Length: 232
Image (cartoon, rainbow, N blue to C red; front, side, top):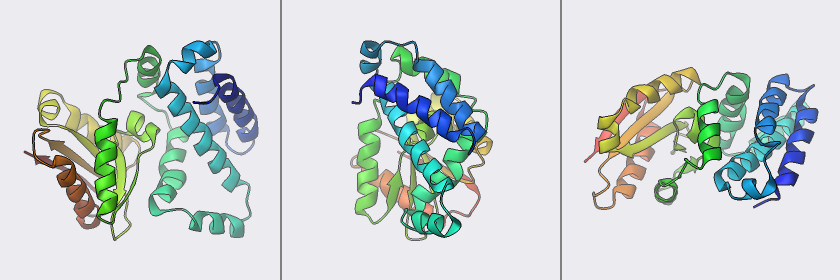
């Protein structure tokens, strides 16, 4: 984990660097900086998810800013080195996040700082992503996409068309309005392709089944579709 004071300094520098390039990014970074500026280093060190988020935000912002300063030719060459999902993140979803109002921002900032975000399904999601990659697919799971965009990970298969994936247990899907909120969130961020997978955790090799479903549907679903399925 990085020194929290270095993270604070990096945010301040990024705010300055982005003011002329993207006032919207500068504003969002400033909001995140104000969130932690008065917090002591010892406290921030104890908030692993806060530090993970800030580190990802710094890395994403640094890269996004760097490509804005390139010539068109150099920018095209730099983007050509990215994967399909990295391009989707840096050209569409990440800019959408800092350009638009985030309805969930105040909620997850409060929960992260209070230690209420357990990330208990992180290991399972990583396992699913690993299985999907073993089947020839590609995945990306930005923390901001999870917190703000109801997306546990983004997947793509042989057609290289991004698909935002949300997974939850059957019990959670039935006991809440999670499915309707999921679709509402995707529409807010102009995410055109999404799949909501509810599953029975007692199923044998359910991680493999989720990976296979996500991979198959990433190739087969139309360009605009919000699909829901259950693995019992």
